[in-house]
Image (cartoon, rainbow, N blue to C red):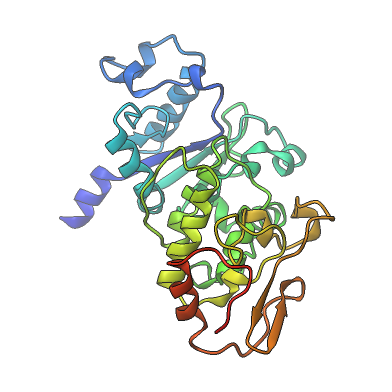
Length: 308
């Protein structure tokens, strides 16, 4: 019985780069439509139609796209959807990745899909991923999970700076932050929100808070873990707390990914009798009370120096 139910309700998810906002079909475009295949507008409706057609041809009755399956005019629904997004992709039967700028391997390596913030969890979360090229043909044979294909996985690892052999749920915080370092989002707050599922964090979504969203993300991480790699970064500190990073690029794994200007001062933490210059990484053997003391200081004003 469970297998029958699971088979009936299995669903496909779409991952893609958005076109212009007015070009994408929204909830209000499709909510009263008898069939999406009858719609002629907006311009990106063909992408949605092809996605649904591809899902149906592969025995899926249900399909989900972020452009039209969320009523973005409903703030409560939008917030709940953003907080649930990682789980929805994780539970999908298949995630279909449409690469509108890919025709071959060379263009695959250069695809803009690998530069966007929200496509990171859409790559990490699903168990099974199929990549489709500009003409909606599979990048490789769909009889296999593209994430498990040795060649594709190696290329993705090189593009996205993700070690294909590392156990992702147990990766240190710094490494996971580094995956986002060279990516961008349209709204600056999404640089924090897109990482919530990857880091196991749940926090309110508040567009308008700008850079403070990334500070809040780091605070939430601190309350959940003793992983001190959260403080192993190089670059400009946040304006609120000098021991928290201002941007994911501070966690970049290579100098090429780091977008800070060379003349910006590198931040360091000063402990009792020990200076930890983070250009060389965190010192080893910090006291066990380190994380607790930082949590205490988070409740007070920002500090350029503090003692454990």
